[in-house]
Image (cartoon, rainbow over all chains, first blue to last red; front, side):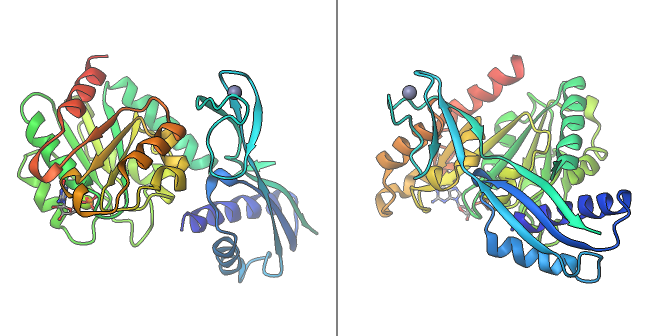
Length: 113
Length: 210
Ligand SMILES: Nc1nc2c(ncn2[C@@H]2O[C@H](COP(=O)(O)OP(=O)(O)O)[C@@H](O)[C@H]2O)c(=O)[nH]1
Ligand SMILES: [Mg+2]
Ligand SMILES: [Zn+2]
């Protein structure tokens, strides 16, 4: 349930931004999360909906965009998305890999007025 | 674009540089409930007693039984009550560190909340993450929890004494682990018997002399 901590921090940032931008209502939060972070969308939405009650984001919807895990092989340089849970290079079967993306936890944008 | 959990990360970096400054190494022990974190700490405290000054941050407490088990070794222990939370964060570690005299300390062990997912996402400012798994769990843990097993600097496979009574597939486990983290040291232990710990102690000593 690290989803709860992530949502709490997300809300802290959203409300900070809202204050800075003088928003009185938040309609939508666009959130980007890497697959490596193992966020369960149902849990995340549930935590989001619990956190938003009584705030200016009460009616806000949450858009979650998942970013695939992308690795690069140190042996042959090939970059590829890890789709199944096969952590090896599909070209040379090398296992020494660098993570290029997949650990994102970004608020891409906040919509409101 | 705003990065979530930046605050945790910033605090973790502060802790990391503080510990570096004071020459203290901090190891973050992560496992499922019951894999053997506390038993690993008990054995390690017994072994190190006298030679190194150790501190323990206990974050996996339902009762104070684990702390009682560890108290007898005479090292300072700070308990963190996560109030049902599923992981420790850098802020709670920051608070706990204030209770120790860091100048009188070589090693700090953090027993994280028993869970393989959440703790692996929160940097505590540790020197290294240590993953503990046991043969009474599934052998597919490295593939299921790649975040932890990629980041771990040491993997302990515990309850080797039970291997023959379980359906744990040792070869599959090692193969998966090597795929996720090809070079990580793997120590195979029966912690209740105190077996298989030589490699772990050597690793710890190598780290402290580094
Ligand atoms: N058979 C066996 N049991 C073990 C071993 N190591 C720990 N245990 C037992 O497993 C249980 C959980 O261990 P504990 O260290 O408390 O796990 P923790 O939740 O990760 O701290 C305890 O009853 C231990 O005695 C082992 O190597 N073999
Ligand atoms: Mg324990
Ligand atoms: Zn390759």
